[in-house]
Length: 233
Image (cartoon, rainbow, N blue to C red; front, side):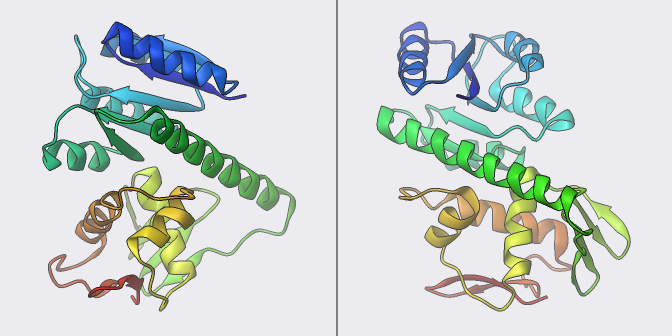
């Protein structure tokens, strides 16, 4: 059983999602505005399902403030078809998004995938604490501290969102290999049946802006046209 913080200001939708999450065996905390969401976050949820359009404080600001102190998985809900809203949410540190209207099956599948990925990362971290220190991943002037969840470039720390860190670490571990967006959703996000791969290029673009000297001409994370992405730096 996981503890899920559900933030949604539409009462019927809030009740429907909460009911279905509880049927899956989860403990559900609810909030109907942004300020209440930040207060409830102190309860230590395992995942946050966060609507964008909220009173008092919108979902973007809630996401921004949560990311200052927490790596909790965040799944954003947006009623807007505008791609900009989804990009903004992901760049602020959300792990994924679902666009309204959505099927309950899709929402539950994405929640399950994020929880599965979180559990895997916790398991890996636990194993590292009982084994010999894991060497950092090194690629040129990039150094990835897996246990400390830090990335250094030329000795200077680069601020990455939790999902950007996961994606970069995966690509560096498999440098030279090409992965499609769908495959990355499976391996990094934990989705068994990806339905919307647009999350991936947004994160790739953000990584390039933070790691590349010239993001428009990337030399670390390449696009293999018609195939996917690979790390070569």
